[in-house]
Amino acid sequence: MTMQVFGHKSPDTDSTGSPIIWAWYLNEVKGIAAEPKLLGEPNTEATFMLERWNLDKPEIISDVADGQPCVVVDTNNPAELPANINGADVQAIIDHHKLVGGLETKGPIDITIRPVACTATIMYDLIGGDVAKMPDAVKCAMLTCILSDTLEFRSPTTTDHDRKVAEGLAAELGISIPDYAAEMFAAKSDVSAFSDAELLRMDSKEYEVDGTKFRVSVLETTSPATVLDRKAALAEAMTTVASEDGVDQVLLFVVDILNEESTLLVPNDLVKAVAKKSFDADAGGDTVVLPGVVSRKKQIIPNLKV
Amino acid sequence: MTMQVFGHKSPDTDSTGSPIIWAWYLNEVKGIAAEPKLLGEPNTEATFMLERWNLDKPEIISDVADGQPCVVVDTNNPAELPANINGADVQAIIDHHKLVGGLETKGPIDITIRPVACTATIMYDLIGGDVAKMPDAVKCAMLTCILSDTLEFRSPTTTDHDRKVAEGLAAELGISIPDYAAEMFAAKSDVSAFSDAELLRMDSKEYEVDGTKFRVSVLETTSPATVLDRKAALAEAMTTVASEDGVDQVLLFVVDILNEESTLLVPNDLVKAVAKKSFDADAGGDTVVLPGVVSRKKQIIPNLKV
Image 1 (cartoon, rainbow over the protein chains, first blue to last red):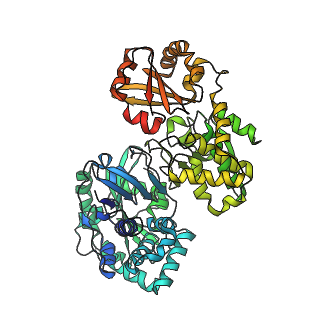
Image 2: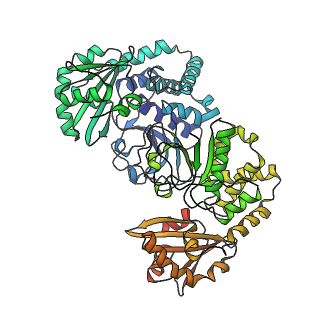
C-alpha cells in the first residue's frame, strides 16, 4: 500500500508543505511509494504556497483505513488526527510539538521530535545531503513552511537553526525573504471568503485549564482591522462554535504579525477574567491588546489561567 | 541543576551503558553538566561491563525532584520510570521501544525513537563525528550495549545498522566480538547470587492481554540448566511475586542464547493454555521449549494470547 503522509486536521502551511516534502523524500530518495494527504481544506497561506510554486494540491482524506501505512507530521496529538489513527500502521512521526501522550504505536517506529519552530526544519536535517536532489518547488515549500511558522523569524519559537536553514534556502533559490514573506502574509490575511465560524476554527487548538475547556484560536494577519471589523459577528459565532465543538469558550487572538502584538476578543466576563489572570491585561471594552504576544505555543497556552 | 540521564527501573546493560554514553556526550561535547544515574541495581552483565572497562558505577536514585532536568533513555514508559517523572523537567528521550503513550512533556523537547535493537546505536548516530572524541571505555560500553541487546546479532530485533556500528567499534577497539560476547554472556548467566523472586523481576515487563495482567520475565543465559534446576522454587515464587506486584501471572522465559530457543516454565493450566494459544506449543510437563524464540519485543509480546 502506498504510504500516506499527513499533518493535522486544520492544515496550515507547515501541515500542507511538510507532507509534500516528506513524500518527495520517500519516493525519490528512499524508494518508498508515498503520497501527501490533507485532513481538511488548507488555509489561504497554504493555498498560496501551492499555487505560487505549482505544487499539486494533496487529496483531502477524511479517515485512514485499518493497516494503512502512514507518516504523521507536525502533530503527535490523536485529537488532531483521523479517528482511526490507532488502527492505521503509523510508521513514523516527525513533529515539533510537546508530547501529549495519547498516541500509541504497535512496535518501535521512527519518531523525531525537536524543539524547533517548524517541521520542515527537522526534515531538512533528516534529509541531510539529499536536500541537494530536491526540486526547487519543494525547496520553496520548505522555505515557506519555516517563514510561516516563525512569522518571518518574529515568533519566539524561532531558533537560530530555523533561521539558518531558511536563509540558506532563500539564498540558493534567489528569493528575497522580506518580499516573499510579505506576499505570504498578504495571502494569509485575505480571510474575506471565510464565514465567522470558519475563521474561529481555522487555526485552533483545544486546551483545558482547571476544568474549563477552551478552543484557543489564533488568526495571524498583517491586516488586523479587516478581522476586527467583524468582531461583533465573531463574538456571536463563538457561542455556536463552542456549543457545537463541546467547549466552554472560544478565545480568538488576532495576531498582528508586523506590529508583533495580539488583540484578544472579549465577548464576556469569563474572557475578561482570563485576560486579567493570564496576561494582566484590563479589558475595558470588547477587545484588549496584548503587546508582544504572537505565539500560542510559547506565550498563550503556557500562561492561560481562569 | 546537573542533568540526570537514566534508563528504566530494571537496569540491564543498555539501560546502564546508554546513560554513561549520553552523559559523556553532554559533558564533553555539548558542555552541559550531566550525570548518569541508575533506577535500581544493574544486572550481572551490566555490572561486568562497568568492572571490565573501569567505568564508575552510576549512583542509584529512587525518584526525581520537581523540575529536575533529565534525559530519559531506553524507555518511554512512565511505569518504568521514577514516580515523579511527570514533575521532572524531561528535556530529551532517546529510545528504541514502541510509543506507549503515557509520558507527557511540558513543551516541545528532543525525542528520538528508532526501530533498532539498541539505544546505544541511536546515540552513535546522534553523536555523529564526535564519536571520534569518545574515550575507549565509553566506546566499549557502546559495543557492550549493542552486543547485549542483539544477543550478539542473534535476536530478530537486530538491524544491519546495529551490526555495522558494533563491528566498526570492535574493529577500532581491537576486540574480538565472539570472545567478548562469550565473556558478557557468561557474566549474565551467573545468577547464583539472586533469590528466586529477584530472578523473576530482573528483566521483566508488565503486559496485559484481554484483561489478564502478566509480568513477562526473560532470563537470557548460556547456561539454561542452571536456571531450570531451580524451576520448582521459581514456580513457587511466582505466586508471591504476582500477588506483591498486582499481576495475575508471572511468565518466565529462559532464553538459551547459544541455541536460540526459550524454555517457558509451566506452573499451572493458565500458562499451559498461554503456551498453546500463543506459540502452538503443547506443554506435557512443567516446562515447554519454544524453538527460535529469543526476543520478548518481537516474538513473545506480539504473540501473547490467553
